[in-house]
Image (cartoon, rainbow, N blue to C red; front, side, top):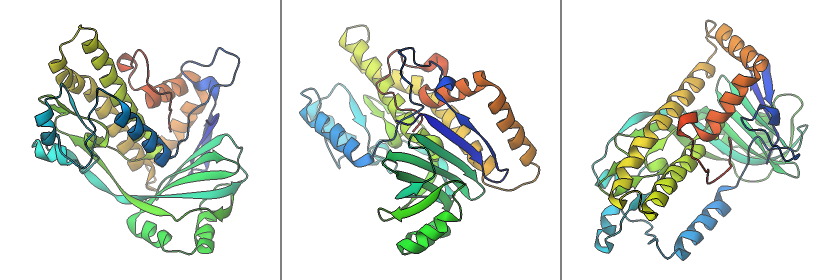
Length: 322
């Protein structure tokens, strides 16, 4: 968990800090509520896959398309096979979107100068840059930059990489050591033209993809699962026919997906440049956020749980916003 989030516009050298009091529902237990959570991908995926394998009502098929599940006559097919979804292609579902000129570079680095429970989101002209605490001085970097810049950073020896990193870190952060090999990933925006077909639903990045700014891609995935879980629970109690789950899922997810994809795209385009006409707008937006706690609560609430009227009654996860 982290308990503060420092948002900084690097071009303006202005920012603000989100604190637990800015949460839509601050903790009433006396303990300090976290602003959000950081989790490593590999152990999370290992846990999820092990759980799916053990579940008696689920048949897990890896590396296959939804059409191969037809022989088992399932009540529902959940296609979660990523942005290049073979299932989406096999079902003839197209998509809207584009690739950004940026890439996303990730690396684990030992840093000094930041509070152990503080995360950073730097809005830089070359792209967003997140510094996420993993404990014991270790941080996860999510560095967005032009594709050529990311390829160059990947190829640097550790000492040269840390020198490049020091040139972009804000005060008072200082890099001590590189703990793994930096890896670059393409980033883009993508939305499937339909979220369901027959009894098949597209979940996660098989249905949508956005820029990683603010960790919104993962939060969208959690909300996909929460909505699907709620609909399946209704079917289990007899209040919804199982064959209606897929279509209902599609209807409920559209508004949230469109909002987040548009918002993240606008945020990246607004801040990934130095256009002088946009600087006053960015300065005013930061000043308004800093002055208005209700607005900060609204922003964190939407980042965490989506639109207020669409929030699940019972969230499956409290991950927010990373």
